[in-house]
Image (cartoon, rainbow, N blue to C red; front, side, top):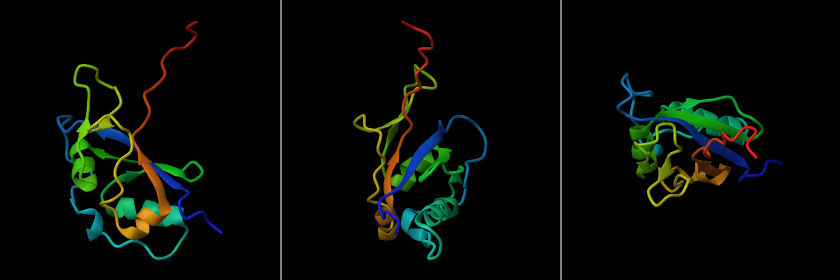
Length: 131
């Protein structure tokens, strides 16, 4: 039996909107505008949902997978503001208030029931051989 709260998504590849190019998933739909797949494992259904919602969905590692798109897409889809440190390119994004968890409230009930969390990536540890 699957753990109904076991699937995790990591919001990776958050690009600043100024980073030129066509927006990924230009078909801007809201979280409740996309039908939740009815067949398959929770992992397969969650991945298909985010793909149909216009996100890049990357290969899973266990019950975790990552989604990517432009900053504005994350903000409109998850109804939250993301904060990027303009003075420190490559620094991790946070939600307004400093946390790393994206809100799941905008998502359909079926997705909220199967997805444990959607978390922004942790800062990279670049302290190789220090100490």
